[in-house]
Length: 398
Image (tube, rainbow, N blue to C red; front, side):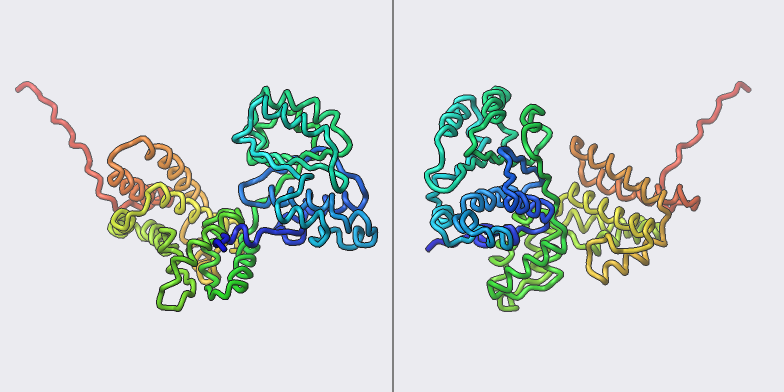
């Protein structure tokens, strides 16, 4: 049997397994208990946070035979049983009551007309025919208009679930006829906990710092985190620790710039040391790191310092305890106004660096400018050696 990637192998099959979206699963389960099902739903949110998964579990639940025939099970459990004929057909991919469409490749008026023709036919088994349309924002305006009448007056057996990462692209005439559910970005600790459970089930040893780094890299997307974990497992399979996953191994694979380099930048600013700043710039350039990526992480680093300054706490800093303590100590070295000015400068530098040549020089110059910015705020003289223009001598007649 071919290998199944982690993101598919551990895909949730129950509402309870969907991570960090309790506000949505609770609402859907209550609707099932009360028998108050709508005909149109929009699931929107970041990629990989469970939109399509929740739609599939919902579609599976509305036709689950045990939920239909057992009122006590419906009220107390409200989960697809996974054992009835309808659930087994869904799991094997042979259910005729659940249809999935990819609007990215089926976005024409003719595709929607075909869908409208199919909607007229009732379910062969169960109570509903469920249509899951992924990336629905990719439909053309004409396709949306062709679908409008069906969505306004659908047959009683039809349920439409639209999944999208760009809610603002869906016409108001469509959105106003649906119940809208916004999926949240998955918190780092929830991603870390889920990855730890997967590693335990797979019999893989892993450091907590490594899982935290994977979670930060995924930026709130569970699917991205699981895909990265697949890569990391393959990368760590032959290391000296018998396949264990370490922070250093993850950082090497992902070409991740360590927090130490970020602290080296702010240390150079605090010490007014251009030499140390140029050492950081050389480290980035010689090791092949992307300058834009470095600036992005430096902005996040300065954001963490600003958060600690304003809250007098590190609770919103997603790092290990040792790194949090370092943030707490370094926050006293700067004023909030100087940090905000440095962030503003780096944001502008990111935009300009995309369209300019001489990356190395401009990158070095941007880092050195941070020293100048902090010096001007604190009123201390800068240690940067900037050549001063010479005054021209006035010629006078003898």
